[in-house]
Image 1 (spheres, rainbow, N blue to C red):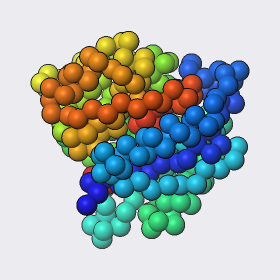
Image 2 (image 1 turned 90 degrees about the vertical axis):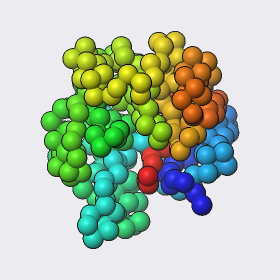
Image 3 (image 1 turned 120 degrees about the vertical axis):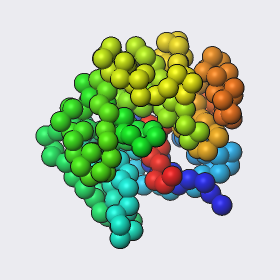
Image 4 (image 1 turned 180 degrees about the vertical axis):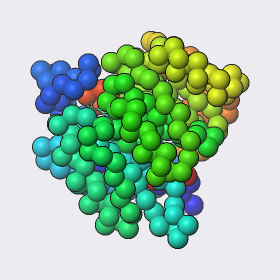
Length: 275
Ligand code: ARG
């Protein structure tokens, strides 16, 4: 029995054509064949090692960042009727706004009710909202505005803790913060304002927090995919891996260099559909 269902978009049209974060440089060549091999490696690790079932949304030409499907939407709790729901992303950059309609169509076709917040309040899906212990932790300050968080609270009916991101290199929550299925949270403290860091460290007890050192955070170590006791990292991160193993996680490291050129990594390339 698969333990989790995960959505991915193949990197068919992946490239770095524009720069909307500090990692991107349109003059950097992407090795398309290598990108496909790395993406397939992640998919394979998730299905074979982590026992997840992977679903795919077709890629669309002209939308090179669509591979980062974490930004598509936030999966909402089921309605009492059993109806599946998502809260659709509202992209900050024009370059990615074209993705919204394709993701909306895909979710509707799969029987989801698609909820929408106002288009002028950017908030980039599950890249900026992650659940831990009954709370949503949601980011603002780089790609999202804080006002958008109220819409997440309204549609989910769950409390939202707003965290301010202050370093442009850590522009989405999922590059600096990752709750694991075993109840731990790995995070890079310097990505957050001091007030937000204080809040995070009050809510999450010290024995559940794994601090990621800067050198590993800069290799996207926080952008991990957690599935049961398995966790997939886009780099070798010895200090974090040691902490993860010591808390009962089985670590898998994959090579994901081509996608890091676009400022994204493993977790950005997945959207968890189920618990
Ligand atoms: N190039 C993409 C962007 O800037 C990368 C997205 C990474 N996604 C994520 N969930 N962190 O939008």
